Amino acid sequence: MNRTTRRTLAIASAAFLAGGLLAVPLAATASAPQRADGQWTRNAGDQTSAVKSAVKGGKAKNVILLIGDGMGDSEITIARNYAYGAAGELPGIDALPLTGQYTTYSLYNSGENKGKPDYVPDSAATGTAWATGWKTYDNAVSVDIDGRPHDSILQIAKANGLATGNVSTAEIQDATPAVQVANVAARSCYGPDSTSCGDDALAEGGPGSISEQLLDTRPDVTLGGGAASFQQVAKAGPWEGETLAEQASQRGYQLVSDAAGLAGVTRASQKAPVLGLFASGNLPTRYSATTATVGGADLDPTTCTENPKRLPAALSLSSMTKKAISLLKGSSDKGFFLQVEGASIDKRDHSADACGQIGETVDLDEAVQAALAFAKKDGNTLVIVTADHAHTSQIVDSTPPATLSTALTTADGTTMKVAYGTAAAGGSQQHTGSQLRVAAYGPGAANVVGLTDQTDTFFTMARTLGLERDLDSLSDRARVSLSRSSVAPGKAVTASASRFGGDRQVTATILKGGEVVGRADLIRGSAQIRFEAPDAPGRYTVVLEGVQSGATASARLTVTR
Image (cartoon, rainbow, N blue to C red; front, side, top):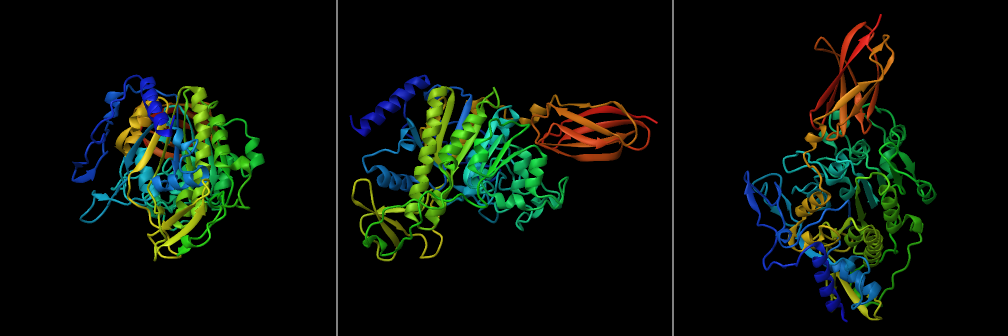
């Protein structure tokens, strides 16, 4: 049985198991872009893939979304040819039974083209698309073209009571992981020292840098690089003057920095979330770098070698994925959402480094294998594998005369020539605007078949998990209780918030006769806030207000003489 026959049978079988016969549409399944308020956008609202009408969608308890940053069809093919040969298969990426393509364009946010397609996107705009269901402009992290913030699938899952995780081989503040935990106008707003934060900085009254917002969003498990930003000092807020690492420790995070530390973690929860930061910047790549040159494909072919700076196997993307799954599956009986990114496929493609991007694609493939193994055993997990945007590398027949290129010896024992033609030597190779593969396994997987848009992935995940997306409604029954209702002046009181499910932050205000006499620190990822009772005796009202929903809850406090 050849590969084509096996794939055809796999698709038919998966469609049958999904609950019906798969009728592959002749036309694109995503609806055409529509004008909405003068903007060119596909998903300002909720749209449905036509595949859903052909195959009964199922509900899943868990979703694992795996992203190969910059992993277009060329990058997948290059890695497959090198590691397994032209007739081989990547045992993870190529194993998902249902496959489609999606479009990835971003939008312009200013000028005469505002709201119209920008055909070559960056990782911030594309990540925002699948994280929130909204198209946006390059550089934006989960805010739309007018700067309005939108909840991510991770934040929504968390508000619905699911456990959540975010794993990357990049700095955890990089665009792809950032879109799940933060809302900022500039993707480079990593920490309080970042000059690009502008109005988003805490000192300007904004929500804070990506690192600070990550601590507020409080995923149960966060693993990756980016430790340097956590050594920066908060410029405002309750933790002003303290490093973000010190803040994280005080807020109950389990901080780990090496393989032994991660191995020692046995549980993750909202009370004690895990923050693993294993490098100051991005994690080292699997293979040592190669450099494409003009005429390089005519030189002796290269065989990729292991990078001596690579982290221990216990911190590979596959190992981190397995660890995240093991922690999340026991964290909530409602299920979990996990995003996993192989980040440096893109970064090595930018550098015209064929071996670098191949190694990172193989790393992601191993992570996909881990996710699929869990999903097949679990039986109630949707796995989606895709990329954020296409990239520049191409397999060519002959050496281009003026383009950077390199030659590799593949698993077939023959030479594969790879060219990079979107920047000169020393420059950064460009993203490209091609549609991308999106593949899936498990309940709801058939919704990726055909041609969809990146934003459709958000709706596929949210529907499959059965999430309530109106987060304000999750705070409708907000409550507050006090550790004591009567207290002496200046004594400590603890206010406990509950049912603020739609809010990531809650403020506390003390009123006397309708007049504000005190404000307590912002509750950030915690259900409790401690404050001192007013000095003057009397009757007071303690009011908690959800920053995101506007929901309020109050309790009476008597200060005795």
